[in-house]
Length: 148
Image (cartoon, rainbow, N blue to C red; front, top):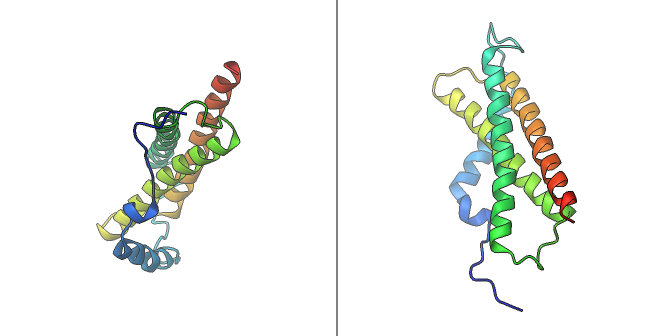
């Protein structure tokens, strides 16, 4: 058995520091209150910015899924990869986490920079994330099914 040339580890401890985790723990409950994210007047469900939220979230979700598949393919030896459900679950988690994290970060930014934070924007982020993950998963399934 060959030893891998390099290994990549993704740990929460290296990406989020204790102050960052504390800030998230304090801000998320405040963000969840109705006053923190109210729908301002003129914030329609079918506005142009909702399409932007949908598209950006879908793109980030697909990119996160594809990027994690690429990293996995480059780092793991082919015989070590499961190529099955466990790998896809990790890819879904990474793609979804990136897309939803970006949406939440955008709404937090809107809250503190004078923008208009909105639950409707987050709703479209969730729909876009789900759509992007469904597209990425379907493409992955079709490709791996074909070459098995």
